[in-house]
Length: 396
Image (cartoon, rainbow, N blue to C red; front, side, top):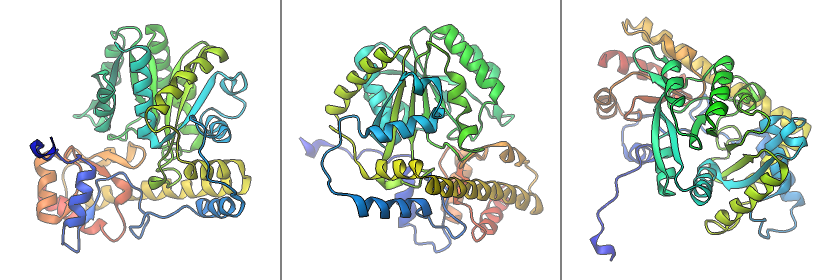
């Protein structure tokens, strides 16, 4: 059975990580995989995370299984972080949360849930989107289509085309939206545009499915939640998938959550019962350690304050790298205008470089970007920026 198998193609992003590790060039630069790096090129453990782990290890008395949907304390902390502790969704128990193994695990649970309750659902993703989005939904048996999002010529959100497409989608379909720091473009709707999106989705009876992997890395913890807080209207249904890999640095703890919003508390609980059947046949129950870290930080004022401060430091460093990259290219005489990078949010941006140019950077300079031209700005440092800019300038 196994002897007939061909080698499967490498993942377009994680495969680059493997290629980077094999590259013997001592000056190689990794701007592909979505991992934050500090000024020294390291992916640090948050200060608050280390202190939370000390508290957890000191007080932990058992490692028994969690419930199928995870820890109630974690669910409450997730909902308060998403919507605010006094939001009507929280106080009227219109939301239910299941702890998932990372954001990807939450997306797969959402996909299996939709496939179970409404198998003819089509899932609409932005063009472009995170490359794994279509894979996850198709693996659950759902049809996947795209809607316009990025205007490559203007390096901006093509809002009119996006809205025109959404206005013609069949009622009941699901629309995947990036809550902040759109991956891969770094271009987010404005608060006013989010309001228009919310009204249109409600009018068309479309289900918002929000991938929220970067809360706090665009403009701030609560500001970044404007998207989901605007999307909700009384009586509306919604799914939000959270990831705490980037904004808590819990990459290998696989810590995420699926939060479902229903029109009534009883409907939310009924939906949760179906989500639990999906989880039970997939990974049975979630890992505990990352959820305990997030819960401890969010429920301990001193730790939460330190976590928020470190997020602010990360935002500032990413912004600084954007500014220096643009300024250095201009100083080297590059005629192409890269100033659009300054208007984008989060770790990622589309550089506008072609696949051929990306391959040249990889082959000639050992600089690794995704084939689409997406760059992980958080991988830039003071040390590698001169070489990066010189390579781009020489190639252009």
